[in-house]
Amino acid sequence: MANRLPPQTDQQPKALAELKKLPVPDTVLVERVKTGSSEAFEELVRRYEHKIYSITYRMLGNPEDAREAQQEAFLRAYRFLPKFEFKSSFYTWLYRIATNVSLTKLRRRKEPPTVSLDEPIGDEGSGGLEIPDDKHSPETHFKRRRLKDAIQRAIDELPPDYKPVVVLRDMEGLPNEEVSESLGISVPAVKSRLHRGRMMLREKLGKYMAEYE
Amino acid sequence: MNRKEDKTIRRKATQERLKPQCEEFAVLLADYWEGDASAGLKAEIEAHSRSCPECRAVFESYRQTVTVCRMEKGAPEHAPSHKQLWDELFHQIQALHTYLDE
Image 1: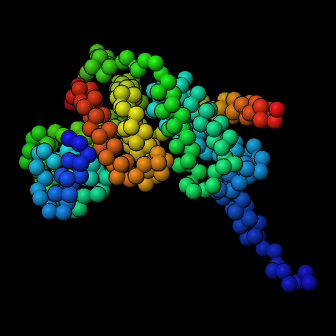
Image 2 (image 1 turned 120 degrees about the horizontal axis):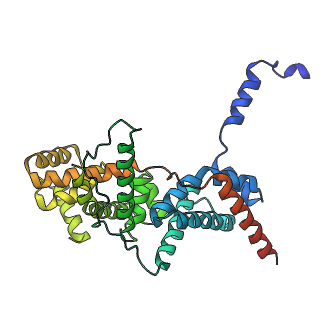
Image 3 (image 1 turned 90 degrees about the vertical axis):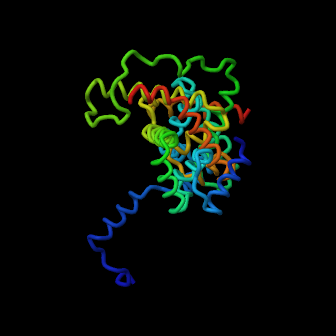
Protein backbone atom coordinates (compact mmCIF):
# COMPACT_ATOMS: atom_id res chain seq x y z
CA MET A 1 0.00 0.00 0.00
CA ALA A 2 2.81 2.35 0.88
CA ASN A 3 4.12 2.10 -2.70
CA ARG A 4 0.96 3.75 -4.05
CA LEU A 5 2.06 7.08 -2.60
CA PRO A 6 4.41 9.08 -4.85
CA PRO A 7 8.01 8.86 -3.72
CA GLN A 8 9.24 11.72 -1.58
CA THR A 9 11.27 14.25 -3.53
CA ASP A 10 13.33 17.20 -2.45
CA GLN A 11 10.73 19.46 -4.06
CA GLN A 12 7.85 18.51 -1.72
CA PRO A 13 9.20 19.94 1.55
CA LYS A 14 10.14 23.09 -0.34
CA ALA A 15 6.63 23.44 -1.80
CA LEU A 16 5.11 22.87 1.63
CA ALA A 17 7.40 25.48 3.17
CA GLU A 18 6.38 27.95 0.43
CA LEU A 19 2.70 27.24 1.11
CA LYS A 20 3.23 27.88 4.79
CA LYS A 21 4.79 31.24 3.95
CA LEU A 22 1.63 32.42 2.15
CA PRO A 23 -0.29 34.92 4.25
CA VAL A 24 -3.48 33.57 5.80
CA PRO A 25 -6.43 35.45 4.24
CA ASP A 26 -8.30 37.94 6.43
CA THR A 27 -11.46 35.86 6.13
CA VAL A 28 -9.75 32.86 7.73
CA LEU A 29 -8.34 35.01 10.53
CA VAL A 30 -11.77 36.54 11.16
CA GLU A 31 -13.28 33.05 11.46
CA ARG A 32 -10.53 32.11 13.91
CA VAL A 33 -11.19 35.21 16.01
CA LYS A 34 -14.86 34.24 16.10
CA THR A 35 -13.86 30.93 17.66
CA GLY A 36 -11.78 32.71 20.32
CA SER A 37 -8.27 32.99 18.87
CA SER A 38 -6.51 36.06 20.22
CA GLU A 39 -3.46 35.20 18.06
CA ALA A 40 -5.62 35.62 14.94
CA PHE A 41 -6.85 38.98 16.19
CA GLU A 42 -3.28 40.06 16.92
CA GLU A 43 -2.36 39.18 13.34
CA LEU A 44 -5.25 41.32 12.02
CA VAL A 45 -4.08 44.17 14.25
CA ARG A 46 -0.53 43.76 12.95
CA ARG A 47 -1.78 43.91 9.35
CA TYR A 48 -3.82 47.09 9.69
CA GLU A 49 -2.39 49.02 12.66
CA HIS A 50 -0.40 51.46 10.51
CA LYS A 51 -3.24 52.09 8.10
CA ILE A 52 -5.70 52.66 10.95
CA TYR A 53 -3.31 54.98 12.76
CA SER A 54 -2.75 56.90 9.56
CA ILE A 55 -6.53 57.36 9.11
CA THR A 56 -7.17 58.39 12.72
CA TYR A 57 -4.21 60.78 12.68
CA ARG A 58 -5.31 62.43 9.42
CA MET A 59 -8.83 62.73 10.75
CA LEU A 60 -7.95 64.04 14.21
CA GLY A 61 -4.70 65.90 13.62
CA ASN A 62 -2.79 64.99 16.78
CA PRO A 63 -0.94 61.85 17.88
CA GLU A 64 -2.63 61.52 21.26
CA ASP A 65 -6.20 61.48 19.91
CA ALA A 66 -5.06 59.34 16.97
CA ARG A 67 -3.66 56.65 19.30
CA GLU A 68 -6.81 56.64 21.39
CA ALA A 69 -9.01 56.36 18.29
CA GLN A 70 -6.80 53.60 16.86
CA GLN A 71 -7.23 51.54 20.05
CA GLU A 72 -10.94 52.23 20.18
CA ALA A 73 -11.38 51.20 16.55
CA PHE A 74 -9.65 47.85 17.10
CA LEU A 75 -11.51 47.24 20.32
CA ARG A 76 -14.83 47.97 18.63
CA ALA A 77 -13.86 45.69 15.75
CA TYR A 78 -13.08 42.92 18.24
CA ARG A 79 -16.37 43.43 20.02
CA PHE A 80 -18.50 43.43 16.87
CA LEU A 81 -16.54 40.84 14.91
CA PRO A 82 -18.99 38.02 15.88
CA LYS A 83 -21.64 39.95 13.90
CA PHE A 84 -19.42 40.54 10.86
CA GLU A 85 -21.00 38.69 7.94
CA PHE A 86 -18.47 39.27 5.16
CA LYS A 87 -20.82 41.57 3.25
CA SER A 88 -17.76 43.73 2.63
CA SER A 89 -14.06 43.03 2.97
CA PHE A 90 -12.76 43.02 6.53
CA TYR A 91 -10.49 46.00 5.96
CA THR A 92 -13.14 48.32 4.47
CA TRP A 93 -15.33 47.41 7.48
CA LEU A 94 -12.41 48.26 9.77
CA TYR A 95 -11.72 51.55 7.95
CA ARG A 96 -15.38 52.43 8.42
CA ILE A 97 -15.13 51.82 12.16
CA ALA A 98 -11.94 53.93 12.36
CA THR A 99 -13.57 56.75 10.39
CA ASN A 100 -16.70 56.68 12.56
CA VAL A 101 -14.70 56.63 15.80
CA SER A 102 -12.72 59.64 14.54
CA LEU A 103 -15.85 61.53 13.44
CA THR A 104 -17.45 60.92 16.86
CA LYS A 105 -14.34 62.29 18.55
CA LEU A 106 -14.39 65.33 16.29
CA ARG A 107 -18.05 66.00 17.15
CA ARG A 108 -17.27 65.74 20.86
CA ARG A 109 -14.54 68.33 20.69
CA LYS A 110 -15.88 71.47 22.26
CA GLU A 111 -13.61 73.85 20.44
CA PRO A 112 -12.40 73.51 16.89
CA PRO A 113 -8.66 73.80 16.24
CA THR A 114 -7.66 77.44 16.43
CA VAL A 115 -4.60 77.22 14.20
CA SER A 116 -5.21 79.01 10.92
CA LEU A 117 -3.46 78.59 7.63
CA ASP A 118 -3.35 82.35 7.41
CA GLU A 119 -0.78 82.36 10.19
CA PRO A 120 2.78 82.39 8.94
CA ILE A 121 4.23 78.90 9.02
CA GLY A 122 7.79 80.04 9.41
CA ASP A 123 10.14 82.77 8.42
CA GLU A 124 11.86 80.96 5.62
CA GLY A 125 10.16 81.09 2.26
CA SER A 126 12.28 80.04 -0.64
CA GLY A 127 12.64 76.91 -2.68
CA GLY A 128 10.34 74.90 -4.91
CA LEU A 129 7.32 72.74 -4.20
CA GLU A 130 9.09 69.98 -6.06
CA ILE A 131 11.18 68.53 -3.26
CA PRO A 132 14.77 68.06 -4.45
CA ASP A 133 16.35 64.62 -4.59
CA ASP A 134 18.76 65.55 -1.82
CA LYS A 135 16.73 63.73 0.81
CA HIS A 136 19.25 64.13 3.57
CA SER A 137 19.90 67.86 3.61
CA PRO A 138 18.53 69.67 6.67
CA GLU A 139 16.88 72.23 4.40
CA THR A 140 14.96 69.56 2.49
CA HIS A 141 13.95 67.92 5.72
CA PHE A 142 12.72 71.24 7.07
CA LYS A 143 10.74 72.06 3.93
CA ARG A 144 9.18 68.64 3.92
CA ARG A 145 8.21 68.98 7.57
CA ARG A 146 6.57 72.36 6.95
CA LEU A 147 4.69 71.01 3.97
CA LYS A 148 3.46 68.03 6.00
CA ASP A 149 2.28 70.32 8.80
CA ALA A 150 0.50 72.64 6.38
CA ILE A 151 -1.29 69.71 4.72
CA GLN A 152 -2.39 68.32 8.07
CA ARG A 153 -3.71 71.72 9.17
CA ALA A 154 -5.60 72.05 5.90
CA ILE A 155 -7.10 68.57 6.38
CA ASP A 156 -8.07 69.51 9.96
CA GLU A 157 -10.13 72.39 8.64
CA LEU A 158 -12.12 70.34 6.10
CA PRO A 159 -15.83 69.80 6.90
CA PRO A 160 -16.59 66.33 8.35
CA ASP A 161 -18.34 65.21 5.14
CA TYR A 162 -15.28 65.81 2.97
CA LYS A 163 -12.48 64.90 5.35
CA PRO A 164 -12.78 61.08 5.37
CA VAL A 165 -13.17 60.97 1.58
CA VAL A 166 -9.97 62.97 1.00
CA VAL A 167 -8.10 60.96 3.66
CA LEU A 168 -9.10 57.55 2.29
CA ARG A 169 -8.79 58.42 -1.42
CA ASP A 170 -5.86 60.80 -1.68
CA MET A 171 -3.85 60.03 1.43
CA GLU A 172 -4.46 56.30 1.83
CA GLY A 173 -4.78 55.60 -1.89
CA LEU A 174 -8.01 53.58 -1.77
CA PRO A 175 -9.93 53.26 -5.06
CA ASN A 176 -13.23 55.18 -5.19
CA GLU A 177 -15.20 51.92 -4.90
CA GLU A 178 -13.49 50.99 -1.62
CA VAL A 179 -13.95 54.51 -0.25
CA SER A 180 -17.64 54.15 -1.10
CA GLU A 181 -17.77 50.79 0.71
CA SER A 182 -15.85 52.09 3.72
CA LEU A 183 -18.04 55.14 4.19
CA GLY A 184 -21.37 53.65 3.10
CA ILE A 185 -21.96 56.31 0.42
CA SER A 186 -22.33 55.96 -3.36
CA VAL A 187 -19.37 56.24 -5.75
CA PRO A 188 -20.79 59.45 -7.34
CA ALA A 189 -21.08 60.92 -3.82
CA VAL A 190 -17.43 59.96 -3.16
CA LYS A 191 -16.34 61.72 -6.36
CA SER A 192 -18.38 64.81 -5.65
CA ARG A 193 -17.13 65.16 -2.04
CA LEU A 194 -13.59 64.40 -3.13
CA HIS A 195 -13.66 67.18 -5.68
CA ARG A 196 -15.12 69.69 -3.24
CA GLY A 197 -12.62 68.66 -0.58
CA ARG A 198 -9.73 69.04 -3.00
CA MET A 199 -10.96 72.46 -4.09
CA MET A 200 -11.07 73.54 -0.43
CA LEU A 201 -7.59 72.15 0.24
CA ARG A 202 -6.36 73.92 -2.86
CA GLU A 203 -7.63 77.21 -1.48
CA LYS A 204 -6.22 76.56 1.98
CA LEU A 205 -2.82 75.49 0.67
CA GLY A 206 -2.76 78.16 -2.04
CA LYS A 207 -0.93 80.80 -0.02
CA TYR A 208 1.44 78.24 1.33
CA MET A 209 2.26 76.76 -2.07
CA ALA A 210 2.70 80.25 -3.55
CA GLU A 211 5.40 80.89 -0.93
CA TYR A 212 7.41 78.09 -2.44
CA GLU A 213 7.12 79.08 -6.07
CA MET B 1 -22.32 76.06 -7.35
CA ASN B 2 -24.57 73.25 -6.08
CA ARG B 3 -24.46 69.54 -6.89
CA LYS B 4 -27.29 69.80 -9.41
CA GLU B 5 -25.36 72.42 -11.31
CA ASP B 6 -22.24 70.23 -11.19
CA LYS B 7 -24.16 67.37 -12.76
CA THR B 8 -25.67 69.57 -15.45
CA ILE B 9 -22.25 70.89 -16.41
CA ARG B 10 -20.79 67.37 -16.55
CA ARG B 11 -23.69 66.15 -18.69
CA LYS B 12 -23.33 69.05 -21.06
CA ALA B 13 -19.62 68.57 -21.44
CA THR B 14 -19.59 64.79 -21.75
CA GLN B 15 -22.77 64.08 -23.73
CA GLU B 16 -22.87 67.11 -25.99
CA ARG B 17 -19.07 67.22 -26.15
CA LEU B 18 -18.99 70.95 -25.70
CA LYS B 19 -15.60 72.53 -25.25
CA PRO B 20 -14.95 73.17 -21.57
CA GLN B 21 -15.39 76.83 -20.74
CA CYS B 22 -13.96 78.63 -17.73
CA GLU B 23 -17.10 78.28 -15.59
CA GLU B 24 -17.21 74.50 -16.01
CA PHE B 25 -13.48 73.92 -16.00
CA ALA B 26 -13.07 73.41 -12.24
CA VAL B 27 -15.94 70.89 -12.15
CA LEU B 28 -14.43 68.86 -14.98
CA LEU B 29 -11.07 68.63 -13.23
CA ALA B 30 -12.45 65.92 -10.94
CA ASP B 31 -13.39 63.76 -13.93
CA TYR B 32 -9.99 64.46 -15.46
CA TRP B 33 -8.09 63.34 -12.36
CA GLU B 34 -10.32 60.36 -11.59
CA GLY B 35 -9.93 59.03 -15.14
CA ASP B 36 -13.62 59.52 -15.94
CA ALA B 37 -13.11 61.97 -18.80
CA SER B 38 -13.07 60.56 -22.34
CA ALA B 39 -9.87 60.97 -24.34
CA GLY B 40 -11.56 63.76 -26.34
CA LEU B 41 -12.70 65.66 -23.28
CA LYS B 42 -9.30 65.19 -21.66
CA ALA B 43 -7.61 66.73 -24.71
CA GLU B 44 -10.09 69.64 -24.65
CA ILE B 45 -9.40 70.25 -20.96
CA GLU B 46 -5.66 70.26 -21.61
CA ALA B 47 -6.05 72.55 -24.61
CA HIS B 48 -8.23 74.97 -22.63
CA SER B 49 -5.77 75.04 -19.74
CA ARG B 50 -2.98 75.90 -22.20
CA SER B 51 -4.90 78.79 -23.74
CA CYS B 52 -6.46 80.28 -20.58
CA PRO B 53 -4.01 81.51 -17.90
CA GLU B 54 -6.67 81.58 -15.12
CA CYS B 55 -7.74 78.00 -15.76
CA ARG B 56 -4.14 76.91 -16.14
CA ALA B 57 -3.50 78.27 -12.64
CA VAL B 58 -6.51 76.30 -11.32
CA PHE B 59 -5.33 73.18 -13.16
CA GLU B 60 -1.79 73.51 -11.76
CA SER B 61 -2.86 74.18 -8.18
CA TYR B 62 -5.37 71.28 -8.31
CA ARG B 63 -2.61 69.01 -9.61
CA GLN B 64 -0.22 70.18 -6.88
CA THR B 65 -2.86 69.65 -4.20
CA VAL B 66 -3.54 66.07 -5.28
CA THR B 67 0.21 65.39 -5.64
CA VAL B 68 1.21 66.67 -2.21
CA CYS B 69 -1.66 64.80 -0.54
CA ARG B 70 -0.61 61.57 -2.23
CA MET B 71 2.96 62.13 -1.06
CA GLU B 72 1.64 61.87 2.48
CA LYS B 73 0.60 58.24 2.05
CA GLY B 74 1.73 55.95 4.86
CA ALA B 75 1.67 55.97 8.63
CA PRO B 76 3.21 59.00 10.36
CA GLU B 77 6.50 58.31 12.15
CA HIS B 78 4.90 58.79 15.56
CA ALA B 79 2.65 55.74 15.15
CA PRO B 80 2.84 53.51 18.25
CA SER B 81 4.84 50.29 17.98
CA HIS B 82 2.96 47.01 17.61
CA LYS B 83 3.98 46.00 21.12
CA GLN B 84 2.67 49.23 22.66
CA LEU B 85 -0.64 48.91 20.85
CA TRP B 86 -1.12 45.19 21.40
CA ASP B 87 -0.24 45.32 25.13
CA GLU B 88 -2.88 47.98 25.63
CA LEU B 89 -5.45 46.22 23.44
CA PHE B 90 -4.89 42.86 25.09
CA HIS B 91 -5.47 44.44 28.49
CA GLN B 92 -8.68 46.08 27.26
CA ILE B 93 -9.91 42.87 25.63
CA GLN B 94 -9.41 40.99 28.91
CA ALA B 95 -11.32 43.72 30.75
CA LEU B 96 -14.11 43.47 28.16
CA HIS B 97 -14.39 39.70 28.68
CA THR B 98 -14.48 40.14 32.47
CA TYR B 99 -17.23 42.74 32.08
CA LEU B 100 -19.25 40.53 29.70
CA ASP B 101 -18.86 37.45 31.96
CA GLU B 102 -20.16 39.28 35.04
